Length: 477
Image 1 (cartoon, helix red, strand yellow):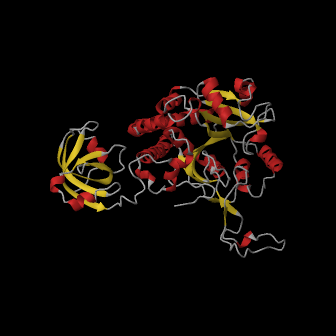
Image 2 (tube, one colour; image 1 turned 135 degrees about the horizontal axis):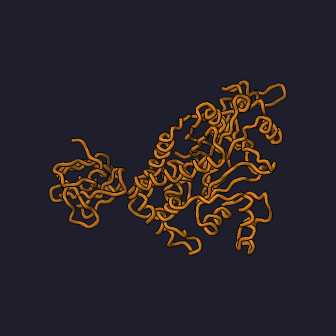
Image 3 (cartoon, one colour; image 1 turned 135 degrees about the vertical axis):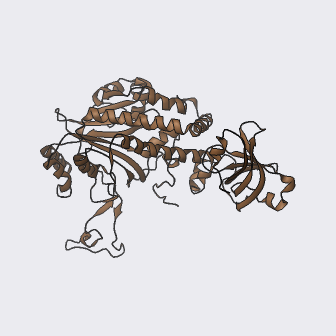
């Protein structure tokens, strides 16, 4: 008999004779009530076992984590909290789970403990909900861009280009590390490496994406990216996923419009599709915050925060105006900020970004026209010669979630900026070709997917919104 997903059984419009469900036991009470979950929903279905006619040996094998198949009638539930339950006629243990050894017992576990058991943590309610939300968000990303006529481009994972100019990249090599070949100057001879040159894991697909935008008009990438930053924080991963659209003929204002519309679409879509999971995650967050001092608690509940982004137009503010606001703010004057804002040119920190969003404007904020010397080489230089057409989108509770810019389309200006920063023109000859042949105004942005999942789920550590986090000193699983 073909089994029916728990979600479909719970959403049934009527009772049914003879259904089959398969899943994993969450709890087994009184030798009678199985809470069964198959991952299709946050909700379990109660399966009522006729314990008087079930062997003692089988009852002992119904333990938390065991995989079971139940066949019986779907009937209206007598208990509170669920519409239907299964009156079990036939029960089969598909896979035993030793109750003494199974780590995911039905009790509260610390997030640190769950990270150490990342291969099993998805069997908990919280992580099942997070991963379903992640999946739906991922689909929403593709849905948005496909509906808008964007072309999905797979940019390389292995590259010789450093898009950010930051140098914090993972090197890719097939050379024997215990016997590296050297050239006449005594340096490593990368001509003998697999690709015949120095290569790395990508930090961004942007540069390659730009080349495709200059032929296909509007493209997006959505793939893994890597940063060899030794950052052991709740906001950094060494391996994460990036969403990067690039659009020919878009200026910075068009870019802001696109980013705002995109973010609101994917959040709205996910709220509609994942209502049960988000309701559960909101309850989880409220419970967690009870143990925090009042000053550290979120000002908004999860769903309120998501609606805040949907219902408020994003306030557009120049970097210069933002600096003036921050310099004159009470936390700055009273030295409550960890990083005091004294002068124009400061690189804004998360505390400054959150102040602008949560305290000053009380709406999502898009900052634009940043100082050129704190932004990447490919951003278009403004006429003032000291700022670039950059933009960052700031959200409550998280700070920066999107970074983008109008790209520098002028060949001579781009080459000059590369010279100043010591970026090798020969290394990026192909990128410069897009400015040699049919250059045009174009713009794009990057959104770290895990930051988006973090915001939508209300989690506070980025390691908890990716299946197997990669961080300094940790590549387990």
